[in-house]
Length: 145
Length: 133
Image (tube, rainbow over all chains, first blue to last red; front, top):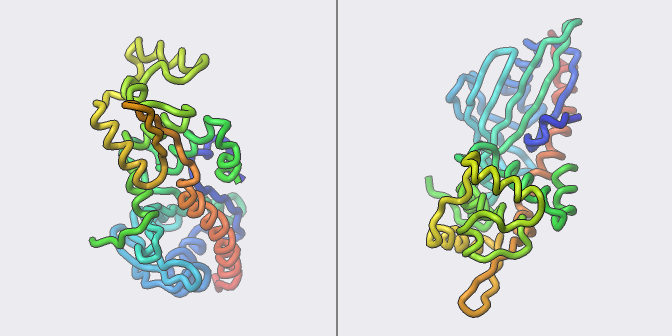
């Protein structure tokens, strides 16, 4: 599913969808539709800078801020689990929509931790470090899964 | 914003500093390493790769740590504080080892979302099928 060039990305998922980009965009931004597939939310207009939250039932709720918003093309928001749940790793979720011949769409979802000051994400840096050492073969497998 | 103190937050914070992360990466790559070796920052690891690195450093193409020993010691204290590094003292020398099991929260985070998103996208597909136009 993910090519070699994407190994630095923590999570990259690719999907071919029958629906047109505009329709996919609506499913990603309409509060009622987002509630149906992701979580109840208080999304307003998906403009850059808008803050919203996702109230997930069995998982920690998430605080988000829209970072990029290009209708029918690209939506990116920060993803921060609420601190009281104890996992406040800052991360970013990006949806890239590419129109396909025949009217469908390609959807790519990328979930990565925030870039650190040294360039590159935190998990990626540690992945590189641990992959270099045979002592951590077990851990490397966990990363690659 | 006030944040609740918890071990996982501390772990992520300890590793967010690029120099500290580089120190940790060096410790991971060596079986056991002293502060002096860490401070010197070259010729510690064995093999051809470290030779190449050494040549690159001599050529000024890449830099080793240009961090003072007190600074290294501070980073080591932070890494020890979150359990990423263990210390062994021998006389006036201290040696450090990586404790990768302390990275478990990071792996846990990855695992949760690797399972989470495919489930959600399946639901997204259902939603798309149910939309009028």
